[in-house]
Amino acid sequence: MSLDDKADDFLNEDQAPEPKHLDNEIIRNLAGLKPIDYDRVRLAKAKELGIRPAVLDAEVKAARSTDKQTDRLPFPTVEPYPYPINPAQLLNEVSGAIRQFIVLDEYQAHAAALWVALTYFIDVVEVAPLAIINAPEKSCGKTQLLNVMGKMSYRPLPASNASASALFRAVELWKPTILIDEADTFFRDNLELHGMVNAGYLRGGFVLRSESVGDSFEPKMFSVYSAKALAGIKLEKHLPEATMSRGIIFNLRRKLSGESVSRLRHADPDLFTGLASKLTRFAEDYSEQVRKARPLLPEALSDREQDNLDGMLAIASCAGEGWVNKAITAALKLSENSGEKTVSAGNELLGDIQNIFESKRIDRISTADLITALCDDEEAPWSTYNRGKPIVPRQFKKQLEPYQIESKKIRIDFKEARGFELNQFNDAFTRYLTPPILSVYPSQIPENPATTRPRGETDRETEDRYTIYPSQLQPSNTGVFDSKTDKTAFSEVRSNDTKTSLVFETEVF
Image 1 (cartoon, rainbow, N blue to C red):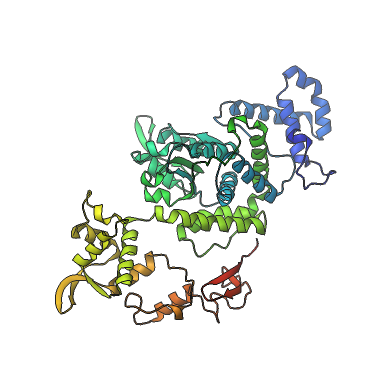
Image 2 (cartoon, rainbow, N blue to C red):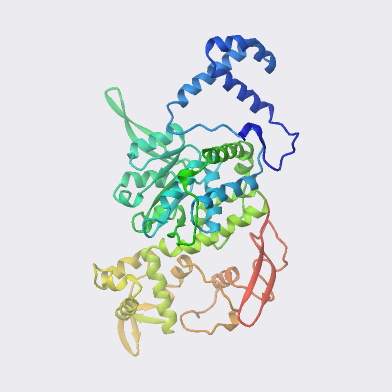
C-alpha cells in the first residue's frame, strides 16, 4: 500500500491530507508532464486549485527547475508524509527498524532513533552531537548500523574518501548528514578533518579558507554545522578526546550464534523511504516546539554530555513522557558505558592518586612512593607510560601542572622529602572527578585521612549536592517537582540494611 493510500494507525478513517500537501502534490505531478500534456489540463487544474492559470504556470515552472537541480543532488529528495504523524509511534518505528537489522541493546536503539530524528531538526537545535559507532573487532555491525541510520537520516551523504575541503563546501551548500565509515583508518592523521568535525558540533561553527578572487585571495567563512556520523574499530584510540566527547557513542558487539537479524540487502526499499517521509513531516510540524524546548537534563551527566543530549531530549518531549524517560535512560547508560574510554590521561592520573590516598589511609606521600604505587597497578598505564617503561618524575610533574599541583618539601616519619599532601589535590578532585553515588548513608562510611578534612562552606555546598539524606532528601524533600529550583525530585525512598533505592519523577514536556 502506497503512502498516499494510508495514514498512521492512530488517525480516523475520515481524516484527509491537509490541502497544502495536496496542492504541492498536484503541482509536482503537473511538473512531470510533457508540455503538450500540461497544456491540455492546465485550465482545469487551475480551476481545481482555485488559482489563475498564470499563477499555476509559475508554480509548475519553479517545480520543474527544482526537479532539475534535484537530479544533480548526491542524495534522494524526500517529500513530507501527507498525513500528520504520531511522534511516539514514529520513534518506535525507527527504533524497531534499527533493531530489525542490527544487534544492539534497546537503549542504544532508542538513542539511535532520536539521533536520526535530530538530523531533520538540524536547523532548530544548537548542538549537533556526533554519532560515533564503535566496535572492538570486525564483523560487529558498525558499517551496517551506519547504513541503516543513513537510510533514514536527512540528506545522507557518504563521505569516507572525501577531502575536508569538499566536505565543508558540501555542508555550506546542502547541510547534509555526513556519514564517514572506516574512520579508524584515516581520521587520526587528517588534522584538517579534525577541525571541521569539531567545529561543526555547535551552531555557527565555521572554517576559514582563502578563496581566489581575481588576481588575489580573500578569506571566506564556510559553515560546517551539520549532523555527522563516524564508524570504525577502537575509535577511542584513533579519534582525539575532543572529538569523542562530542559524540553519542554506540559500542557494538559481535552477534552471537543465537541472535538473528534481517539482511539489509533484502529490506523493502519502501521501509526506509516511508520512515524518511514521516520524519520529514515530523520536523515540518514540530520544529517550532523543538526550537522553544528547554528540557531538564540529568545532573549525573557532564556538561558536554548534557549538551549532546539537549536536542535529542527536546525531540523526545514531542513524543510524551515515555520517550522522555527512554531518552534519559539511554543517555545515562551510554555515559556509563563510554566514560572510561574517553577519560583524559590527566583525569585518569587524578583518579588513581585519589585511590592511593584512600586505600593507604594517608594524608601525605613522597613523589617516589606515589609513582611506585601508581606503577604497582598492573591495569593502569603508568608502569609502561614512558615508552614501555615506568612514568618518570618529569612526566608526572607535567601531567599535574594543568591542575596547578606541584610537589613540595614535606615531613614523613621525621624525614624530609619532596612529595604531596592530600589537601593539594582536594580542589582538583572536586572539580574534575565524578562524585561517587553512595549506596549507604554518610554515617555508615568510616572516616579516614583521605576523605576527612576541616569543613567549610564549600564542603557543605558540595555535600548538599551529592549526599542522600534519609530524613531530608536533596534536592527536594517534598516529593513534588519544583521547576524553579529542582531538575529532578525524589518521590519515594525505600531502604534496607544494604541498599538505598530511589524512584525519580521526571518532568513531562
